[in-house]
Length: 356
Length: 260
Image 1 (cartoon, rainbow over the protein chains, first blue to last red):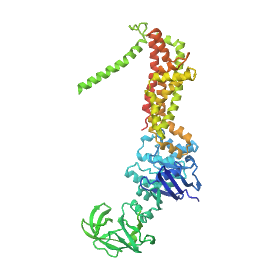
Image 2: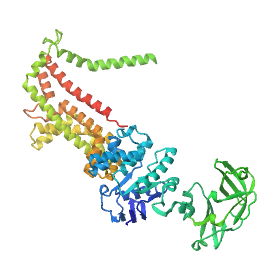
Image 3: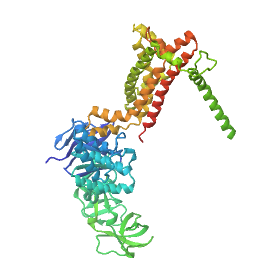
Image 4: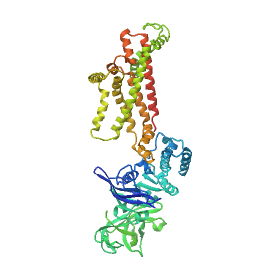
């Protein structure tokens, strides 16, 4: 079975600016694939190239195994949910959703049934006759999704469709999108700058920066094994990045560390500037630590109680500040400002990566 | 402050009376039974029935309506193209072209008319219906562009892109999405063009030829020949009524044309 979407060395320039620089990736059928990156990284351009709304300067785009470089948008059988949704203001909900089916010459009875079904899927049954401006933000969002889904596209492209919603609805829609994708069994390509959204929804994520793809992988893999310090800091709530060098396998010498720490390091990273990346939740804190690969003496320099966990900042002897998240399981995990403590982690809890 | 408000209010009312009183008098005396313009002797539709029987007048009315209709179609098509070009595309010299589109609004109509007449006679273009159409279309298209431009500026490109991703080709996209969304603007532009053409005197006077007269031309020549008469009052009232209806429709469509 051919891949749903395949990009091979796609490059797109706007004048002097390179929006997409030699992009290659493959999206399997029924996969939820995210393009994640800061604004201006070229992720929307990639999506628009797949939709045929932009023409790449070079490279090949395949949909279901067929080269579509010269196929116009309306013949690609794709759906696109726009960032501004672009619901047709002169039509009601029913006619917005029915538009794609009418273009496909589906008969009226079938249209009626399919619109009804898709509205039930997103929990908007009975709103067929509403005008677009009478809908709430979340409802508009769902109608836009329905409109793109109902003509049964081979691939559904989503361009930051949750951007305009407030945080609470946003989180709920994130889970709902994932459920809908599983239910309709379609290939989704989702563009976002929000790493939480990408992590929650995606089977795989492609992290983009400056028009290039930096890393492609499953959410967990990218979270735990980011390829460089840019990705490590872009993905996840927070990360500790300690600059230094590995002169021999198994030992990392940090600029601000008093002694070498034990690490696992890939051979090609020896004797080049590297970064030790440790997630705050992987670090342990106690007055006295034992049976841990690396132990450092430190002081609590900031303590925030977040309910489910404590967020501490600790300072080591060389003025190195490290963030630590400790699950709240009672007074044993509670420390006060300026408490003398020890922090520690095992070598598999941290990774050595290249600087970006 | 209170006194100032009062003065401003009375001043405004005075201005309005100054503007509308002559029209009210004209309308009132068009229903006068006597021929006199100084004294109102009783209500009568006598002048109107006289008008209805006048074949020349019917011919002029039909000329006016036909001219306005053709001018409207030409103006709206031109305005759609011009407004689109100005708003949606960036090209060299764009802002210069933008300015040139609006200049006809400030050129004195008499200058425009005279220059057009000179050009038409230079080209040996026969004066009559088509020369009047050309004369009207040039300035009506300009005003129509101004009206449509605002509407097109608020039009999101993603509407069209959305239609394309839903399987619509360029033509389907234009007729099912672009045009309907722009429709309130198109209607407003059309009504404005129609009213302007219907009312026009100077351009018509300069560019028409023998045998082709519009309503304003007839009114003017009657006024010149017989001075002010109740018959003329009735005629002007009639013409005023038609323009008023079109302006009212335009205002209503503009108000209804807002989606959000």
